[in-house]
Image (cartoon, rainbow, N blue to C red; front, side):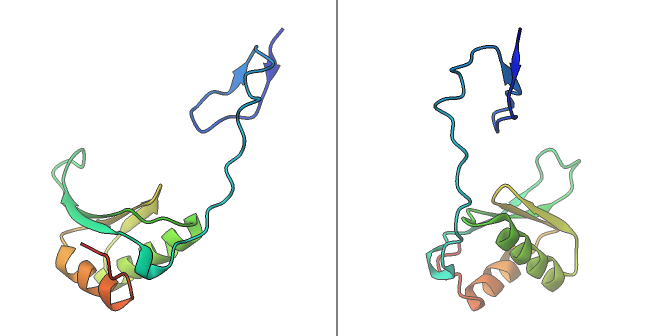
Length: 112
């Protein structure tokens, strides 16, 4: 008889081993690093996007809400669509130089 457990981030939904989840603990919600400590990388990508160009902002360390807020600011400034999830902001189009300049203006001094 199997015993059901909550789903884990690695995709495992249940286990018949009662000791399997003893070493697993929920990770605490991380705090957002200060802007001057964030090491953001801005680059262009076309992989798996049907030839469409997107600008990626990688390396954000913080809460999902703060990531969404930064993504929304960038999408508004660029006047285009995009998404923000898993520490990655995706902006449709080539906005590398503009995004780097805006991030530096907003206090993200370690941006490249």
